[in-house]
Every structure is written in C-alpha cells, then in structure tokens.
Image 1 (cartoon, rainbow, N blue to C red):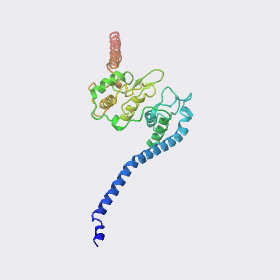
Image 2: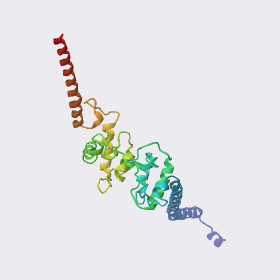
Image 3: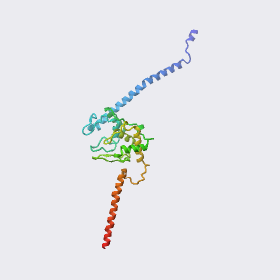
Image 4: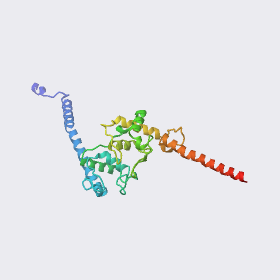
Amino acid sequence: MKKLSARRRHPLAAVVVLLLALAATGGLYAAFAPAGKAQAEETAQSLAIEEGKKLYAVGCASCHGTGGEGTTDGPSLVGVGSAAVDFQVSTGRMPAQQPGAQVPKKPVVYSQAQIDQLAAYIASLGAGPITPTKKQYDPAGADIANGGELFRNNCAQCHNFTGEGGALTNGKYAPNLEDVTPKHIYEAMLTGPQNMPSFPDSVMPEKEKKDIIAYLQNVNGEKSVNPGGLKLGGLGPVSEGLFGWIFGLGALIAVAVWVAAHTAKAKKS
C-alpha cells in the first residue's frame, strides 16, 4: 500500500504538463509562423505580378513592348519602378490616348487594385523607385518656409513660384500643381515624369520633399490670401508689371487719342 501511494501523481502535475505543452506550442508557432507569413506574402506578390502582366498585355504592350523593353511608340519600362507606374496610371496619363509632345492628365481607367498589380509587374522587370507610403509624403509638421525656398530654387523655373504651371518649348508645359495630391507630388519628384528632372532621396531627402508639399498646400490652399488682388496666374512681378505697362499705358494712349480727336473736332466746329 505504501508503494502504491508513493506512485500517485501530485495534484498540480497535470497543470504543469498543460503549461509545458502550451509553451511548446507557442515556441513552435514562433518558429514557423514568420516563415508561413513570408510565404503567404510571396504568394500574394506572385499573384499580383501575374494579374499585372495580364493587364499590361492588354493596355500597355502595344506601345511599350511585350516585355516592357519599349518600342518606337513608347519608352522602356525596365527599371522605372512601381512609383512611376502609380503616378502615370493613377493620374490618367497612362494609357495614353494618342502620341504627342506631352501626355495630359485625364480620367483614370484602372482601379487602385489594378494599378497596384500593374506596378508590381513593372517593378518585377527591374529595380526602380518604390511607391511611397503615407508616412513618406504626409506634410504634417513640415517646414513650409524651407519648402518655399526649395521650390523656388528647383521648381519655379517651370511651374512658377506658386506652382500654377507654365509653357515650355515644342508644345510641352509644366502642369498646374494646385489640385495634385501629396502622393503624386512626391512620386513626380521621385521619378521625374516626362520633362521633369528626378529628385531621388540621394539628391533631395524625404524631409525636403515633405517641405515642398507643405509649401504648395499652403500657397494653393483654401485659406491662402493674395493681398495683391489679381495674381495673373502667379507668374510673378515681371509679368504683372508687363501687364500693367502694356494694358495700362495702352489705355492711357487710347484715352489721349480720343480726347485729342474730339478737341480737334470741337475747334473746327
């Protein structure tokens, strides 16, 4: 009887075994879950690339080539990255309706999910700028004054100092930036679409891009005040002075001629 009683288990033994089993299960999960998650992400990316390839074959291959290598009707897309695809397609510039000096902005053809799939496929052709996250282009807390200085030094030559656009050579133009979203402004600086030079993070850091976005939102926002009155497209004091000189002086000359003509008629009568 003593031997049998000695072999009896402690009342807490079952609880200890259960806790050890749970710990072992947690360890196994910790060991295998990351690999499973990575495999799931890889599978989702592969599916996105496959769907993007189908969309590309229908809407893009006729100009850019079946493998994105480019043709006489469109440039190569190898190495342009997902950011360039997101900018061009989500602003409606691509697919282009017809060839020309510059492809204009127009209504968007694809959904955002389809754009992401196209971007995934193009990115698979060669490394390039990646579509930015909201954290990268959100201008909250940015330095507006520094953004204004950066914009005037790097962008105002084409877009004018308030970002209202301007004409370039050979039928090209710098578009108005008034209604452009922060994401698309960031992508444009990152990729340099059409006639625009690119400003990668090695040339213009992320913070400076945010500063420029904040400046544009400030000067073109609903609360923006123009104490000078008619801003004439925001082209600056030279254009405004020229406008005043031509039209103001022209009006004065016209009034002087009218007065002189009527004075001469009065003397004759």
